[in-house]
Image 1 (cartoon, rainbow, N blue to C red):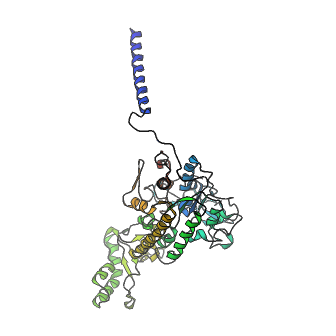
Image 2 (spheres, helix red, strand yellow; image 1 turned 60 degrees about the horizontal axis):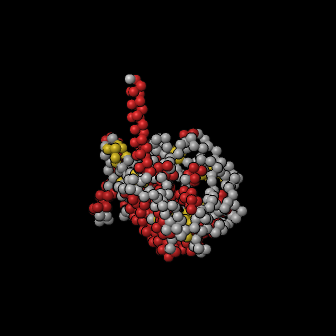
Image 3 (tube, rainbow, N blue to C red; image 1 turned 90 degrees about the horizontal axis):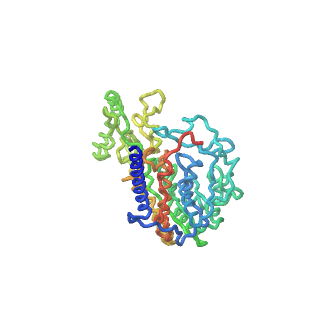
Length: 495
């Protein structure tokens, strides 16, 4: 009896195994109706010598620094790995010495190590692991080129044409990151070093810094927007030269910088006050508010401006900060400064998060920045300054689009991509990426540059554009990258 029972048990196990095998066999035979993917083809593109030109977004800059891990996950390096599957050659990058980041000049630090998070706001790596010796020294240990990744952090459009931009003798006007790349030809430009490699295919993503410096300094004038003729000449020269030997390529435009986390993280209403403190602050601003009423009575300002400039705090965790606004009517004749409380239309730079609420005079609670001491222009982008930036980006992008169309190149609309990210988020695989700092997955801890996952998203967009223009099939053949395989942040222990 026992023997019969055991045989029955094994019979059922055999039937179950056969059922599973049949099911697996049916899946392999595509019984669900899915067709096998076509083999990868490069179409009309020749990827044998690929060179990428650009700025920090091309280099792989992330978390406020350049370091090996993010360079290896730069979008050009991701593209090069895919290009290698269809005839692409080797791809060399000017790798940093470690994963700390930062730069030194003859032992003196000139750029700081990366930012990290331990679950909260971004902080300097050294605040977590202690002092770091920056080992990447532009006077002592530069790598040997030529380099396929010619992304230079901080470069504007016209810098790619500038001789001597990588000559250490020209510091501080030279770029220290480019100094690492010029080797025995210190006066060669980014474009010259790129063309010396006789590229068969190129990517170009440049122009962000032509407006970004103005934005990150709050439009205070210390870093002006590049003038239109200079930008037009740079783009025309870059594209005409890069295509002069028959190379094909892909070009991306400029996002609205006001869509990035650096300007969308700090809100205007971050001042918590109890009733007693609010009363004291209001008392301090009473003469200013009274002066506004005098200006109104004398017809110097409208009722709307008087209301907008009136400063009033209350018992609340969400009082608006006080800012300087040079666009307001000049009332200096009455001894009145151009102050008002911020609104949701004002954008604050990310460093303002650690400045608002501090004391201008340490130990004096009557000098709180953003309350008793209005924030200076460098901390905030006024609506008028945002309009300047948007107009410049629109004009620059028109130049890029016209040059791309004339040369018949592939085009990536990075502006539309980042606008979508900021408004609704971007679905990629099983992820919804947003523009939120730390948690959104797309922007790194500096609020400006992408995470490695963000660079993977960019790489996919570049491949889709190449498919559309040159008849390759990275997407149709299943060769877009899985963005989920790329990290959104790096551990403080990564060295």
